[in-house]
Length: 520
Image 1 (cartoon, rainbow, N blue to C red):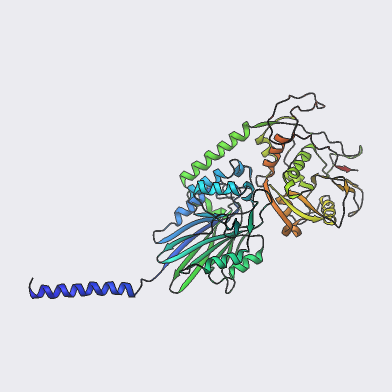
Image 2: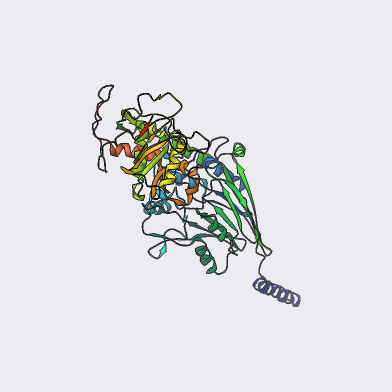
């Protein structure tokens, strides 16, 4: 090697060493773009409906459109996707999760509609699907009942997604402790080293104050409200971005983060139902959704049971059933009985089901599960809540008011009363009893109802008093019909009906006696 080559080799070695030293001493600039697509309260609306809901095929299509090699794209759900409809409940959430896997979901939090399957089933669903259920503040036997968080790294930027929940039902979630959501998130983030650059919290919480507390934590960048049913975006000075995509897939939210040496910025936008038509459906997910729905229709049409519907004679002879005032029906009695029976673990003493949400009548004889499902809006599910006797009296009075603030005439179980159609407002009800005892205005009662009860003006003051969310009214009614009716259907005025042997895992009970509401 000549002198020139030796010098060149020394220079090149020096340059290489300097580069190594520079890389070690001077770190690369940390920088990343992150697109976070989020949904909430899908409530079993898995199929695309033009102008209404995205369905998982369009959600997958949106994810595909937003994917970029230079950015990280994440799809998450803030809870309420596995229940609240007969379709979602058909395979206890399994089909919904399969669609979410196909659509590319990374994680989900838990909401009231998801709790209906119980903790063991939820853990199994998460394990089988591979989708983490984020619920950092739910504790069981000294450890997290589900998953604390998931983590990503992009361009040297550390991204953490966690979830917090509340409002656990009494049934199926026993042994789980609900810790303070804000304290849990703060503790989780504070003990991370190195500190995360982007923190996203899925907050399926009933309290707006708790959501605000989480948004006030210094390292939190975005809070996705999974309980709200309306689309919203809030950004207060010194607080994290707080957003909600509403419910049923009518809107899909997208938060775009940019993180680097200058800090983190977050921009939110919504893709609404009117834009879904221009979004290409993801074929694999669309085919899977159609397959699951067709199986659901076939299964519910083939399942049959026997039912006995009482002929209600609860009105005076001069009361005109063709007038505008509705009246107690045998179908209404069955539905109200079913809801009261299902909600008994909360100590429910009576049930109120608005007549306006019952879309037909049952007839004694054989009936298919699909016919029962067809009676109700698909997202109608049971809840329990507390009211005083005085408040319940006012609510019952309001049922007959005919104004827009009322919940409408209710079919009832566990209670009875007399209504004087010619009386003045506030004095029309008398002889109100619950379980055979006179209504006590000062006492607090646990009442079973449906989601529309709790959302109406008559019940809105008691939202904070809601205790539990249960399965769909359709599913509850079908289960009740299977379990509660005798093997032989009594003879009706039209003649005798067939008798069918039925298997039941519950004690068989006679239908509750009719004539709960006397109208004159």
